[in-house]
Image (cartoon, rainbow, N blue to C red; front, side, top):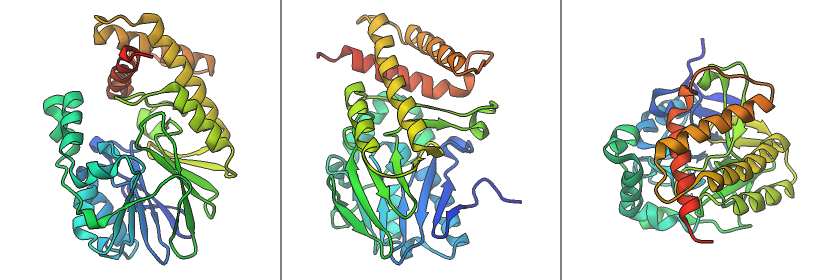
Length: 313
């Protein structure tokens, strides 16, 4: 029987690894490309490090074999474990957006910013974050490529969720590794519900619905079939882009309709839960209860929406 942490084969040389974020299945994924230059996309937090190492070993690889480690952006659930991985992958380069590179070299500001969101639970949730040596950091800018030997990846700036975010086009997989740029796919194996759907992440502090729309239009212009989400797995391109854009605009309208400088967080989370229930109802899905399966995401998304509404425009 396949364990949830066993790598799942997608094509001949592409594998998905469930990172078991916060001990939960189908929450976060990394992708491994078993090419001439073996490449890992996303590290998750340092709490997922051992899971990745074990998955690589099952495929006949070790961190020392990696040529590249790519992070779509530097949020801790995507790149918090990069320093630990690069300690072992001494021959590898960490590929990162130009806005995120300095945070990998010196993560103190990133860590302190995350502490402002997660408070004393930060270490418990994400483990330790350590620096990546500057000589191991490789920036890829918009339109630049990376040749893995048999597979050439192209990088595109895709802000909206984070300013330090790029997505990676893989023509062999007919896909884009989109990080959080094309939403979160909530899977049945995570929620326990009998349906799946895509919703954008509005977590602090860079949510920008106009940038989301521009990112969606950019991704529409690139020929490919599949979105590979970090959260979690695969969506048809058209579905993911449509739902991400529509919901981003809807969420922006929601917060603008309720926001005031002294609004308590609970009022925003209640409004967001109601918005999600109504959105699901319009899709033909009825969920009972208080959406407790989404508790952490609802709080983070509410905080991000409040920050967005508080910014002058």
